[in-house]
View (cartoon, rainbow, N blue to C red):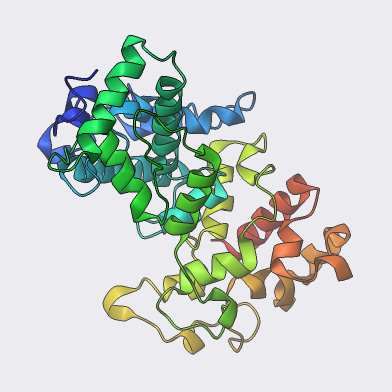
Length: 339
């Protein structure tokens, strides 16, 4: 362990890489294509199989998960996160432009960096808690001394962890002859806040928000779950039906509001992305489909139990206990609109 802690190629040694044409991620998932994997994702009896990607991308991360925060190892970690996001987008059938933060939120997952940091810090704490004088404790203490001794400043395991903590406003307490225990929960929460960044979503409603960031703003106001414990992707439905539902929630559907946004050279002004089923006046966005479009009024009557004074906003509508009935209503609307 001590010999390889400072190796710049530690990520590459832990994880096999694919042909360069496929990017740095490689065949980490144990399957040749995303399609082969996605067939097993929506098993009725195993909705929790979606995070099966994660164990492969954790392999050996105790050594490389926080190593060299600004070096080659960081580039490789970024490539792994991109690979992970790409496979999730393929499984969910959403656009490549779908923000990763939205996708992970919808699936109740965390960025891989959160997992890597947690595993690394827990590994550190296990070594720090080993008996004084034991081989592991002695090696870590020597590694810590090399990182913080005046004139040495080695870029090793301890130094990398300290640099990562500093990058999110945390610090590693250093005492002579003592290996500190790190508060993993505090660090992970600080990392989550750092990755979330600062947004001004609260300043705008989706219908009046600037074009830049409109997709994330819409998700934040209309679809972001209130609870991390219940997710729509866990419903026992077929993969194709679930994809259509997730496409609706993640701005990858074919309502005019989205089609006009991603029309490239044929870009349509937001005010002109109107509904063709109710006179061509109202903008055909997700809110219009759920609550406003007169053509869908018969469906709202059919699913009358979903509509009350407590469910008169998009987030409250999707937060109802009867997820399956909400799911069926949305798909019935999409079927009626033939999208």
